[in-house]
Length: 255
Image (cartoon, rainbow, N blue to C red; front, side):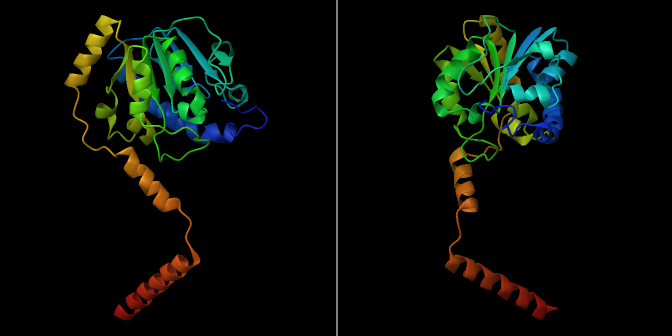
């Protein structure tokens, strides 16, 4: 991302709040991905302090690489320092010429300029035939959320590189509160269509999974956010205060 180590909001305090839920989520999500493949090598683009890679190592990966801003080095990095690559993802992808069994990028793209969207997906596809990806949808609030797009927009970009979207994780974990809600809402698995065995396995896994029923349309979510955050005029404020006071008096009189 674009923040320098000194000015970044992504410090010990940020990751102290974020890392436990991230690690807990990874410990539930990655075993589902392992039903599709058991990756020996994993890269996480926008890894933060490396919580997902730490779980990947625990599950048997022999090589992991984390990519993020240099602030991660001083914010409690959970993977070996020599497994970390510093990069400003707001301007360019990781300086790597290597393929991995699995590429991860979760809740990262919304922090990047919209002009980076196409290239960012191309960079992920260049890293692996299987990409575990999620990004915040319109209306999803968060630190430095500047590029909110629906899953379909990202799926279209992956499709331009021959990658199919598979909804393998969400139907299985939609109601699992161990997993942070934004992962349950947004995460999809993208598979290179040229990999026939993987594509076939992902298709079978998708068909065998439960149906996803409880969904929220991103336009509706965005509408709710606009209603909840729009400024209240003086007239509206007085009316709301008057109605609240009237309800309070009514409750007292009923006692």
